[in-house]
Amino acid sequence: MNDRSRLSRKTLRTAALLICALVAWPSLQAQTTQSRLGATARAAIDRLVDSLATEKLPGDVIRDKVAEGLLKGADDARILAAVRSLAARLREGRQLLGASAGEDELKAAASALFVGVTPTDITRLVDTQRKRGTSSLTMPLTVVAELTLRNVPPDLAVSSVESLLRRGARDGELNAFRNTIERDLQRGRAPRDAVNAGVRVTLDGLGRTPE
Image (cartoon, rainbow, N blue to C red; front, top):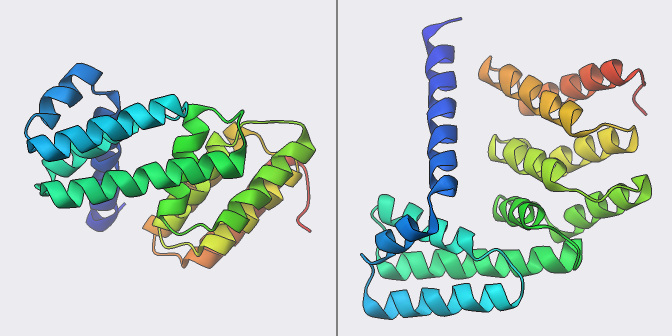
């Protein structure tokens, strides 16, 4: 493995650890961090969190987004814009996934919408899962969002995951599919080629052939 590949892997691991750390922060610590905001911004965020709680949406991610913004040195206006955008995506996710969607699914849907996955494409994944008789979309949406974040075209990310779901892929296979593509991308493979190869490898493991 060359130095560039090691650096890329190290960067991804560092980013993943940072995300995990932010998500895992206790509510009290997030609120303490929020005290660095101005009074007007704090009041607006408190109202937003309360509103999401009333709607049975995960308000904790709003506090996490605030902490992330403060960590990056964003001002109150930018933080408020970011959390309001996130709240809108959570609400849209609820509309797309339905009233029974869990918090992790809603967070994954919000992430997918943020990176450019369209509501229509998310609906495709919802319909595919319903036909399978399963409900959780957390892993499919997470994989789609992460692939899109790595410069895979959103429509390709969705169609590949949808194809694997139709052939019975479970969360473990989808996770392996994502890891395979990430390795190929780190080695310099073009996104479309990496995804097509990942689909073939995953289908081979499932004992199926592509359409």
